[in-house]
Length: 182
Image (cartoon, rainbow, N blue to C red; front, top):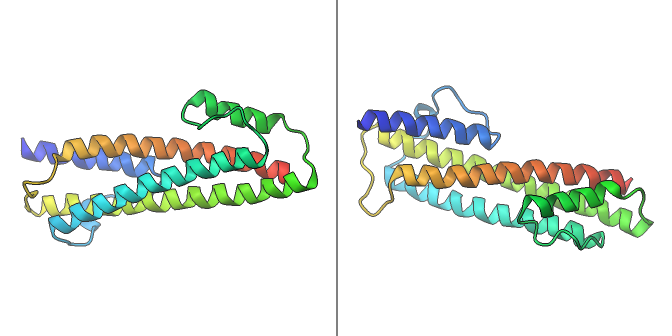
């Protein structure tokens, strides 16, 4: 039963790595640096916190881009409809005055930088998870104060899917901002 759980965990890890756009080595658990399980858990905690922070920063960059171009119909971008509203507004713009065009290029740079930060933090998450899986496959036991690995994986999967969707959306917005910036 325990080995079956590990297999599902590694399979889940593989899906997370693919979702985050990170290259996954064939046997990622064995390629992870050998760190104690407590260190691996701490690395996962730190990278999860960074992933959330980078996600929020990308959302803020997207809202700032909308504000810079005087687009007010997209709210907080928390839903697909609000996101589509911003994208549609940008797509419908044909030209901008010079100051707004310059603002569009600056906004594009901020959005792309925030998306890159989110990708980097997704890579850090992969490393932490690889370390954790490697420690478990060496037979180290999870400290009693830690949550169940399946709960962690489920939560991170949701976070990774959300981050991936936001990165893809940010790229569409950046493309529109580049078009408007000239």
